[in-house]
Amino acid sequence: DTEVTQTPKHLVMGMTNKKSLKCEQHMGHRAMYWYKQKAKKPPELMFVYSYEKLSINESVPSRFSPECPNSSLLNLHLHALQPEDSALYLCASSPGPGLTYEQYFGPGTRLTVT
Amino acid sequence: GENVEQHPSTLSVQEGDSAVIKCTYSDSASNYFPWYKQELGKGPQLIIDIRSNVGEKKDQRIAVTLNKTAKHFSLHITETQPEDSAVYFCAASRRTSGTYKYIFGTGTRLKVLA
Image (cartoon, rainbow over all chains, first blue to last red):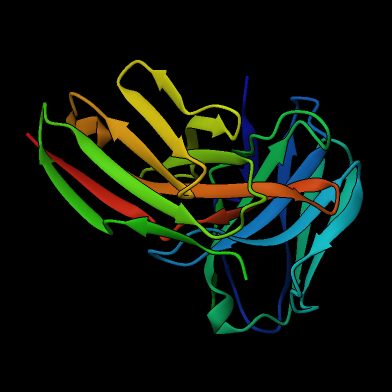
């Protein structure tokens, strides 16, 4: 089973709202990722968690706040977003450092900021 | 910085014909090269990958070749079917900060005409 689940599937939020995206995997993977994908573009890496610790932050604005409560769960907290933050937000997981390299993506959350 | 060029950006083929998508990477330390298929409204799906110690890998109708000297790798799809229509992304990867960070190509929109 290589399933990564993401909720919600769609989210519409105002610029003053606070919302969270959730990602879950039960494959025992120890690395989890957040990507942002704009229309007709490749995914852009935002954050990487390795063994529940933040290992990469690609200079993402502080209005995006990641959290990894346990090895199966990854959240992305959103606050005071801008319309240009509207995009597909993808979560991915991989077995972990020193293990195999492949990343498995979830279906994404389509975010619209109004 | 590191980048991955991908060509062509769009490709139309007749059902049953072959399709070839090419990528060139810049970082000579890259050692893992996955290919993803992304259908409309879905997350990227890993379809095949190759590591730098291998020149070619095949899985049924799809194959990937790697030329490390030229820093080129290619995806080959034979006997194309309408369900192969999607956007395909290549990526090059190396170990960074304890994990594997992907640099994605810009994507190829493949259309298989019935």
